[in-house]
Length: 132
Ligand SMILES: [Zn+2]
Image: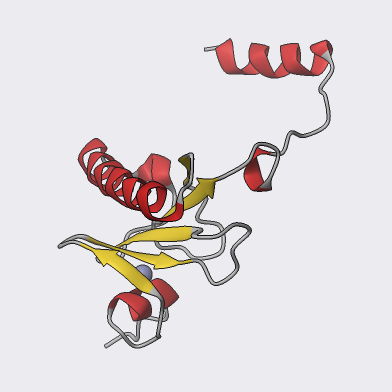
């Protein structure tokens, strides 16, 4: 038997403590231990699935989006967030998860703008994306 070293599987199974605040039959929501903003959370499927969101089935994505909406409503209602921003990044842990960022004020956290791009840079990327 191969031991599963996935940290999110261990959290789901209760082997590693986490600040769980919501769950249904398919997902748990926990507080991010390194938050940039109050209530920054992770929504994690109970079944191990690779973290690349574009590799998921439409049905599985519909399920996690529905759960993310419920958690977002909870964060907005209880913490006073104006809205919740959603990111599927999954770079540190290879177990699908949505990161939920409560949004309180413009220009903070992930809403910060990057440096201005030139028209040429933008056009180069647009051409790559539209070349089929
Ligand atoms: Zn896992």
